[in-house]
Amino acid sequence: MKLCKVTFLPETRSVSVHTGSTLLKAASMAGVHINASCGGAGTCGKCRAVVQGDNFRTEPSIHLTPSEMKKGYVLSCLTVVQGDLTVEIPREAQKGVGVRIDTGRRPGGELLKIGDRKIRPRTKKLHLKITPPTLNDNISDLDRLFRELKKAGYKDLDITCGLPVLQKLGRTLRESHWDVTVTLFWNRCEIEIMDIEPGDVTLSRYGLAVDVGTTTVVAYLVHLNTGKIVDVESDLNAQIRCGEDVISRIVYATEIGTVEEVHNLVIETINGLVEKLAAKNGILPESIDSVVSAGNTTMTHLLYGIDPRYIREEPYIPTVNLFPVIKAREIGIRVNQNASIYSVPGTASYVGGDISAGILASGVYKSDALTIFIDIGTNGEIVLGNKDWMVAASCSAGPAFEGGGVKFGMRASRGAIEGVRIDRKTLEPTCHVIGDAEPQGICGSGMIDALAEMYLAGVINQKGKFVQGLKTDRIREGETGLEYVMVRRDEDKGEPDIVLASADIDNIIRTKGAIYAGFKTLINEMNLTFQDVERFVIAGGFGNYIEIEKAIIIGLLPDLPEERFHFIGNSSIIGSYLVLLSKELRLEAEEIARKMTYIELSVSHSFMDEYMSALFLPHTNMDDFPSVKEIIRKRKISG
Image: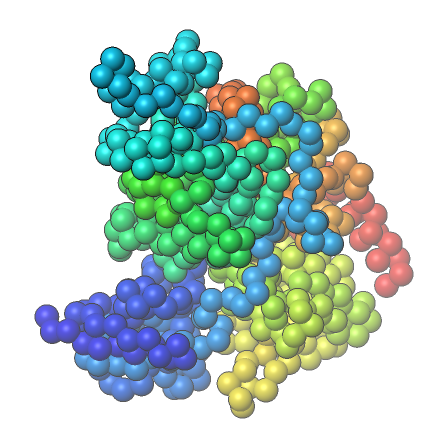
């Protein structure tokens, strides 16, 4: 196979690939982002590109209209390189600009306050002035260091020291004139000497709390002496080019690309955040000597470079739930190479450390109140319980609310429609767009709004099907069926109208139906009703922007009084921060993971029954949604 040069515009990046490589693979090798919700399976239609020249072979797709194909559009995952090519990535397939990421900040910009906690991180810097050796006191350098540590109060603990520290021990002691600072790592009944530095540098103590999300990665730089969050950075997880949900990532890592490739992408993202945090705050990355991460089970497997394939194969067993503490050098995170890397443990294949961290941050595990906790993202993880018991499940909801599977779906970034109102008489929409920019697509909160408004305005019926015969040109026959025009654009300039098509509505209903069915299945399993639930905690960045009333109208959330709902934002990063600062809270997080009983919904007959019942607006049983029933009754009277 010969090598071919592929140049990607508008970034003008080139890469050499062998003939037979797909454009999506070539883009990944070039470091060029192309949206690919399905990870290259050819099912999402997001990885659009315009190819110049004839040196390629492609397959037709239902996701491309005849007019688009005439303009040279192809799907990158279905297009094979056969010679030198120039490829233009259209705006809709590029990485979102200004993606809205929940970093734990309040609306005014202030970092979320964490309650008063005793600061007891697992790492500690200790300043020592060591007595130099003499002919009469001629024990080894390491034994001399151990002796000083025992004098400092560590006599009842085993003390260990790794090879990298030993290799610089003798030189550092002598060059510093026996005045050093050691970094110690507590591991239950053992203390490890992680590093040794000249002089007193006990104030240079930093840790990193990281939320390794499927879509985004958030990092807190934390001063370990004070517990202060010094700064925060975030970015899209570079793994997005391998698919937007965990199943797509697993398929890409094990069938299309490699585990190492996907692992390196998340490490690249974390290192980028570390570099920004260090530069902005005038510190060296080497001064970060403790890292705590939280993520779902798949993300954490890939962070550690562990093959995740068995997570998606029955009986859905992960390789590990409680991950070992490792060194930064083992996975390539560019902080102090002897820094400890600890991941908050998970419970099962689809309830990971991000949920344990969320339960820790929310306080559900020590509350008397019966609570439902939900983290709505590319998956919907649910926990039901209180301080006495907790059951957990995960709904394979799909990436619709992140933009996947919806033709004009996009992440919550500049240009995304996030709010919709439809006039009840004219059926004309009013759209609120993030950044007050020109609309480019619709994000998850906009989808919920649009679906609710279309239902209340009588544009669609309870089954989500378009109502025939309405006096509006907003409903029209599209190339794949009926569609509702959200925004009219100039198609002559290559900007097609933004629409919600029948297939999009079906996808959104399937997503909301899976999440509601998860709630209902857990409630039924415990012989409870929704009226028994005293608190409903919604976590995740997406949850911050949900309008409760609209979510109830479409049947995403149960019909409960609005005061029972509480938004806590990115609870995964908050939980990671707490574990970073407190040895005791680390043990509590591990206890939370052990305490949760996992229910596998994918093999539950009752879940499938509930799911089928939830594929309506809001539900087949309107008695479960009395407030919506009343709204519809009043609409019929006024109409």
